[in-house]
Image (cartoon, rainbow, N blue to C red; front, side):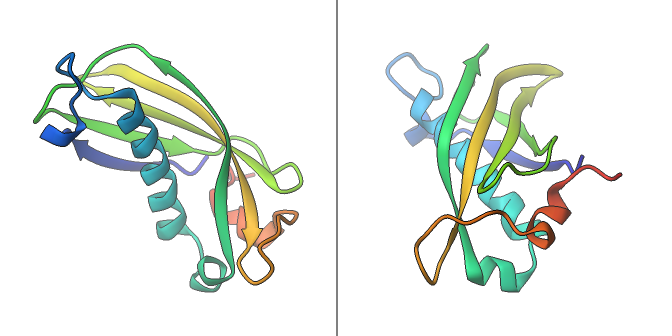
Length: 131
């Protein structure tokens, strides 16, 4: 698997009335992590030609993060695409403990047509586990 990591620090605007990161912020961070992975690993011509959209999020919340605290986000893809869709896994960890984990499903869209298409093999290749 190709693992991508990113450190994120909770800002005051990320905090809800309970004093920790709001669930909607975790969703935003999941999307930011996936997008950053795409930007870092994809070829420039693929970034120009395609965009990814979320089809599904499955999220487990196991812990909290307060303002000023940092978390390490990790994302990876375990299996090849199924048609237009790819499953991506995410974990946010702090001090060796997983605070949030997710499985997200994304679909690829051709920017020129606005339509979903089967994920091209060369687009998927940088994200797949080595054979």
